[in-house]
Length: 256
Image (tube, rainbow, N blue to C red; front, top):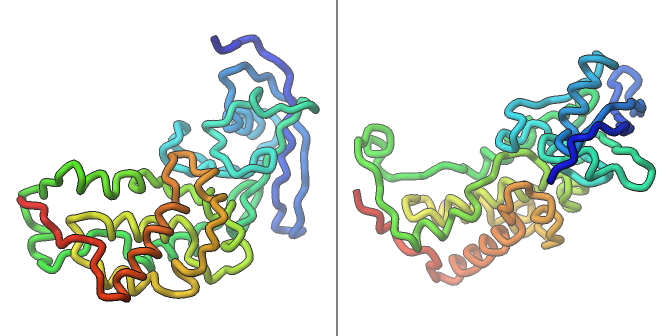
């Protein structure tokens, strides 16, 4: 049973000040119960203690990914992280912006490059018949096996936590990153997609699939259990088989 008794907790906000181009940690005392999330605490701080605090959030229920940040050294969603669970021995929770993305202000990071890399791998269904793609009134049926091929990688909410945790993305800014590459495989594995060879060619670069060193940190921090590290290994395998003239992916078999 969750304890609803209020307790004093310290939240250390190590926000970025763009004017001085430095981080300025500030300590705030909040009342927290077993239900209080880090995002709840930050909203409370902004409303009652520090209205200059910059924090991004939207759904507050682990769907939009907007409140991704580093909590006690680990990339996490603030809306899914309980304050009392993260207090530690010092009775403190330290929060800071993700370092794997350009920082704008406070706890807010810039996602322009993140989404540009995402788009560069064409994360959408490619169909040869454009009229069919945009005007058909029918749905494509999928077998259980066809659905299971991509569903494990379809829950990405684009929070950017995997990119922040990735040692390659943090040292090579040209690397496409685990999020974009995992989504490239998600669409490649979809039986409804007809852009298989094209999609593999886009990912077949040193900044693409071959830049991944399989550290696995991306999968450990994913709040939806997507396992981008595994998806990238499947993408590498598909690229290699395509290069040898073998087709790992069957031709689309979905019927309307």
